[in-house]
Length: 114
Image (cartoon, rainbow, N blue to C red; front, side, top):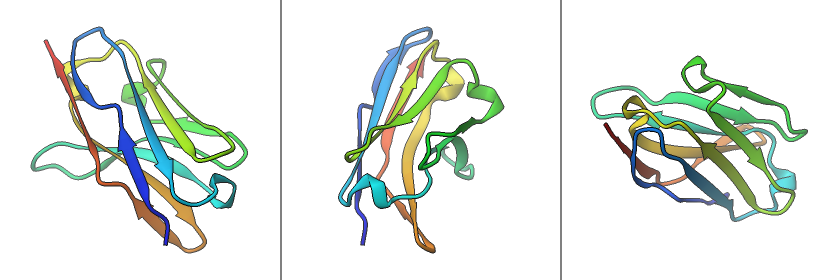
């Protein structure tokens, strides 16, 4: 069983920055892909960014050029969010893929005011 704990969310003005962290209970070297999803009330959870075990990354079109996903070789994945917009508001969930299972964190709220 893999546990994930997110942190770093909060309230920020449009144009500001935040850095989210996701700490993994297991060694991150045993994790294949990791990433971030975003969910707003009444909507499905949408993929924001993915980072693979070898450092490859991909992003939703809406965040390209503004967000950067990374992971260290110990236990943590990050999401650096710059030039934030009100439409970036939502609960951000990290996930980790190990074997044939996906694991999820509890989510952290990001609110961007206009």
